[in-house]
Length: 462
Picture 1: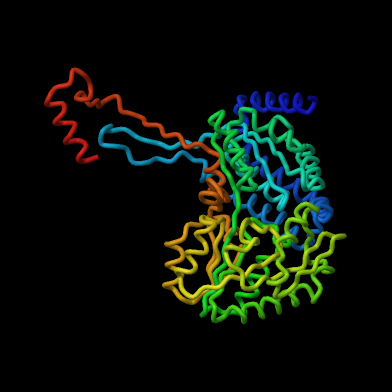
Picture 2: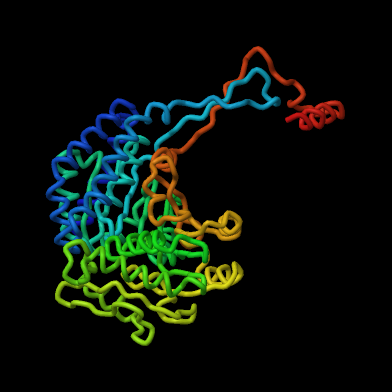
């Protein structure tokens, strides 16, 4: 009950603060970005330590995927916020002669940001940047499954920001439910499709707009004419980053039957090279977040299909990179998103095989294609619905702050990053400014036959 009262007080304060108009000043927003940048640099060591304690994340990966990418995003936002926020003049309609039409960017108000555990710092702070640059106040609910990082986020935000502007609320599922029952002005959620449905249902009760960044089984297609060495290298890196606990990780591989075995051999070669032949003891290889997920992932290993790996360490919750060969869509590992270091290999002969496989889990968050065939590239892009992806690479499409990131269908609603973050957390309101010198008299009653003729003629030109 005490937690709920505290939440109510925070929301009341944020409503009052937003009404003060302070957050709408562009200079204020830039000041907050500067403050956030200072806070992250100050807390860098503590963030890395927290990520290490939560799931043994290597320091390099922590900086690369959690800290560095956020600092880059802040820099990009500071550079462009003045341009993004300016009212934009657009073409007016002939139905309103001598008028001018403008688009104004308006903040929503109080935004709820619900972040996941797999990249607990990045996926809390990246949406926060969008909320800040759009002029909102923010409530962050970090995942309780990464408690050390959650605590660091809370400590950092409380040290540098007043809770009437940005607040971090920790807690278990009951806190999530209570927050979702409140009347926020915008909800930004990152997590599983299952929980995403709950969030969207809760948002519907208040007609609250929301962005859902979800997941799904992201395919990785390797054509027979692909560079097998570079394909294997990039697939292994993308799949095993954060031990596979990445929403845009290649979930499974669809390899052409003529090169499948060669690809597997090269992947094994790079796994051994990256982790010096012993991933379970490597300091460069992360652990699984908790026992529940460890048990879920290991249950997906079909030892009759193992081409490499299959071992695990219950003490440090590490699972060896495990390649499963001769997999079909009917196997257990293909039922849901793996979110771990299991690599199923399916095979194809032509594009129809690819389409049939992906249709089972359609509209993935990401898709990766390794090929030198321009026609196949065009076919895959045009014929398959997916959130975003790469040709001859994995993961890297999300690193471009100029490109929006988001899913489609079951993998998400809406997108963000860079200017798209500003757009996502802003409402564009159109304003028409009419001339008082010219007025179209035919639009007023009483309507005559001549009025109708003029109207029909007008609409031919609009």
